[in-house]
Image (cartoon, rainbow, N blue to C red; front, side):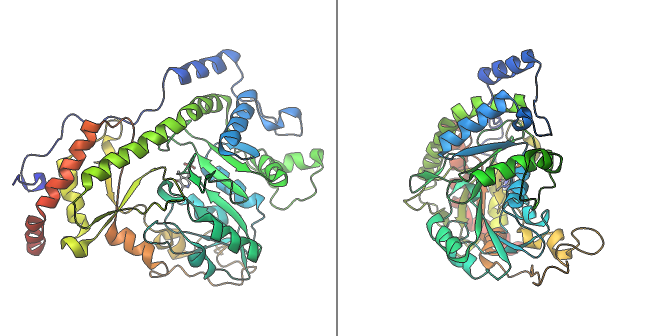
Length: 441
Ligand SMILES: *Cc1c(COP(=O)(O)O)cnc(C)c1O
């Protein structure tokens, strides 16, 4: 049996590096050149004027995005963080309100409540899909709940029908964080169109990107208008526009520029192909992982697609007898770095981000100013609870059972992925050695 690289053996492959993530090509170069030639790199005016809604590329991009996702309106923003902040504001979140959200997500899904002076309440996930469910959300609803932020984590749609039914029953607004799930269907319909507002991300790490950027979708004309106002200096505009509802109409500059929008149009054309490629790659990897006891693929219920922003696997230390950190360390030692992201190490990780409720913001409740708003705001009648143990499935996944990797990203070839598969088999063949190593640790 080949000796494990982390114990001094020959690695499966350290060279050449895995190929760098690259989705940008000739089309984008030409589109950018055309915008540069036009001289108009952005065309918003922050007053009520026909250019209030931005330039031609931005408007074309919004329309195209909304159309392929089956939404009525698209509002482009300069990041999904901006989009989520604007969505929570448009939904009317404010002091005293709560928003229910998973703690197993990127920070902005939850800070979207805080920037609007509302308090995030964390709901647990289903351990097989990593998403919140109507059941985990239901137990967190109080008389203060105003909205639910549903994150389609890793690219798998949450079970939206029961969540929407619950929301209707309780009169709650639903925002979908679709940052990891563009063009991904649940029961034949794209995510982002089930809730009241859907937010997509176009940062470099996502399936398609514009450097930084986002599109926010909605079917509701009123919400669309509020999103457009918040994106572009609301307070400076509302008088001229005659806006009646001034709640959260303070405004920001969340505008996306013409260059990014032009790139976005090219990227959108490629999106389905890039996502299909990820799905094919995951199928190839899973076939290769067959026979590895204690490594369980994420459940993908038959009524939905998975976009595989990350590929989650459940690791069962009770089956292998070896803790996850040792297995991941052994796997990393067998495989090369990825070009352009050399500093990130081998792209396989233990868990995902640290569960949000355990991070400093929620552990200290400092928030805004010296008085701890919104957690300790006099308008807030609840008691924030961010203690360890509030979301046991999230904590278990993060600490012991979840392995995520990025070996399915284009342009990884079958030969590249075969090396990753060989590394898993080599480590699994050596479980007995790892158990001995662990005993000696
Ligand atoms: C990437 C991401 C965001 C934020 O996107 P930006 O465009 O970088 O602001 C929000 N939520 C989730 C789930 C993400 O993965």
